[in-house]
Image (tube, rainbow, N blue to C red; front, side, top):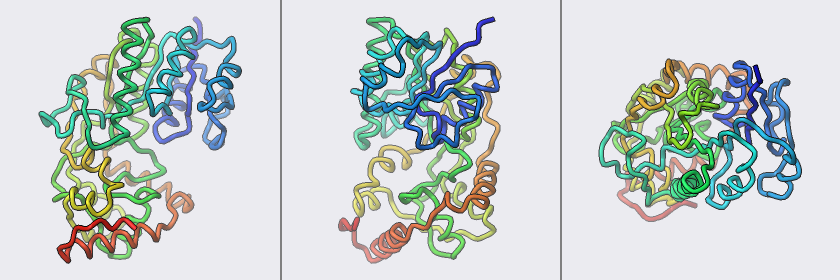
Length: 341
């Protein structure tokens, strides 16, 4: 029996690392193409090709004469990059997997439960609008040229290297953990009762690898998430409990946060401030037996175990610390002027 081959473009990120590892376990011949800045995260069995995706001509050279059963690109963020991949892989693969985002779904949502047929429209976040444009380019290529695309929409997916939370700093949730440990107030957007879904990377990988080489997935759009649903208050409390502290939660409206610092508008108003519950019946139909198994409290413990062994993974962020203090002070003083600096 022929060994199937897959090319991961990226392969060392938050969600792609787990996909690479599981593909190897399932017997795929795995090749990763990236710049090599995180080569230590690649298993020895992976073939590594060094290349810069921003240079299409160099990609053509390093991929000359190569074909793959599956190509999965984790680092396409603009319609121009999608067009590049269509041109590059039209004759090189049996399936092309585009990693989009669940943030593309209409905001505000017309109905609380999200299916793949929920309209896509996000006026708040350029990132989501670019992903929508990529999807449109790729589906047009599927309809007109039979380009073998499968679109996957992850939601808030995380791995052991970082605990996912709400209003984060440039190092993610690192400083939020410190504020909890120090007894400082921690900002929660809104009243903390909106619903959210966190998916651990190894669970996502099970759905992802089940779609690789799956003929029923061609031309389809599929989101892959956990079925667990939490309020943000519950999520923050779970993290605090894992740290052995009592959380001092301060609730601030999302639109106030966005007015105070517009750089937070996209991911808040265009994503996290909305209650989102995913219907995963499609991925379960395409990948029989798929079920996310890592609860958020279990994932948080895995993250804390990793962070204890790798303190460099959660550097201090005094800028975010000061930003939180300014935002809290401004909110309780009744002001709302922009003060991002």
